[in-house]
Length: 461
Image 1 (cartoon, rainbow, N blue to C red):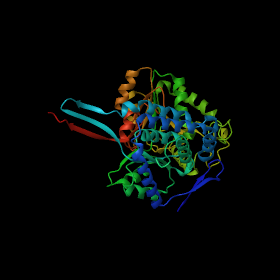
Image 2: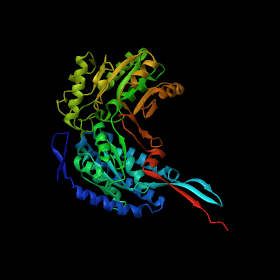
Image 3: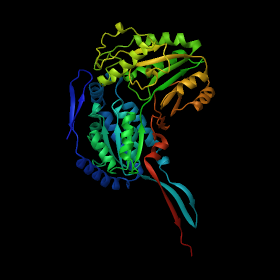
Image 4: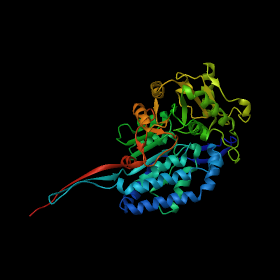
């Protein structure tokens, strides 16, 4: 048995501990979930939807406490009010399309034959959620998986140790069967062993590229489906007809919010040469106005990074870029709270090149490089020069132009005049080392079910 610790980035203290369960206990939890799922999938769809929505509403009642917990566990400032607004939006969006998304596909209904394709729940879905948005990322799968008739086991990251307990407690209180939706504390080795033992029917993993590779290795040969949402290095491109003020406000917020710890955050920005100086000047002014500090202080706009090793990686990338000729636009004297530990000042880098690690490796922190480009063709080439492909953000007044550029980009989502957002009506997906699969939308329901065909020949007299 391993003791899992949540070390608070606020002050380095141990905020919470939980004991991981043994493989035998995990297998027993799966057995309970599987038994509960058989009855759950027989319930009317409307009833499943109502219970899941009630669970979400119950979770909302705890939001004030959750906001404080998130500040302690991973450092997000309390002023931003937590994640419940997005949780409710996504869960409600999936509930609204469930009936249509899960409806039978009728091929024939005649006097001779009935031929149809139904969506069958996988059975037991293991959701492995990350710490950076612990409720938002989890609900992407938990809500549609339960609605579709699956049981769910939820394993959260050690950095947000209490999030899974909170979710399950809320859903159970709302009437979702206790064995159907369970929180489980697992160490890495037991997680891999549980999957390798062919105990679960589908795995949804959000995390690092290395973690995703571990999931696929564990599932190898079991034919267990694995959906992965991994790293990102999302670009923004500001064109000559862009609204510069709107572009600066949105792209810099998308780069710095949550201390840059967003899978779909903006990590590199390309600006057409005619707007470059104006964009950089306005971006610097925004960042200079941030307040780095204690996330429990309502005045704080940027809190600590979740772990010192994450901050150290950003510092290393920044140092390397500066040594290679990049220019730091933000004066460290403006952020004396940067302690060399988890508290890390925001930084904008200019004179960067796409060869620098800060423009290639996932930073996952409050640093962004801004490059000048002379054409759409140059911007497309630079945006595609990445091992990742989650989202891109295009800034132009011309939707046709954005669509044409988007067709050339290797990415999962093309945004125009917005960034860092998940639309529950659209598939959340990626390509390259960002992973495979898709959450939300009709496709999210399809990935959490399997097709089952019926070919019924009628007896005729």
